[in-house]
Image 1 (cartoon, protein in one colour):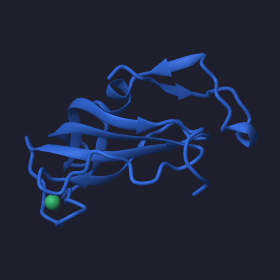
Image 2: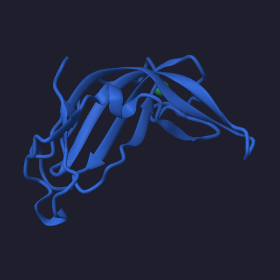
Image 3: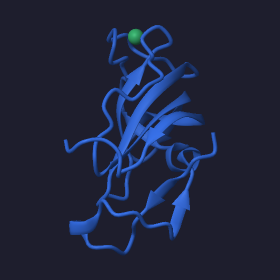
Image 4: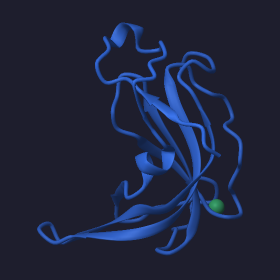
Length: 132
Ligand SMILES: [Zn+2]
């Protein structure tokens, strides 16, 4: 898949749903290395704790007026779905496969999972779907 997300960096929030093709980057770039919370990462479907090195499916979104992606859900191999249930207007949404890695914060002495080897499955653009 080689579709691309569109970033809007210099546009007013009120027309944030409009398309702007000036800045692009791929979901791989956007999600790779993204830290996904500290401590445990659990499957949204079965609540099983996901382990480092495990191949997972993640659901991530970015509202049109935000820069950062938010990974909202994780799925294990058993619970994964390959389709976005209901695309949300004004949000870029993506399903992607990723391997869970671990990052260590030496200063705070905490571990967190991060996304490695990201492989997009499907995505929707801000102009698709209905208002949240
Ligand atoms: Zn599961």
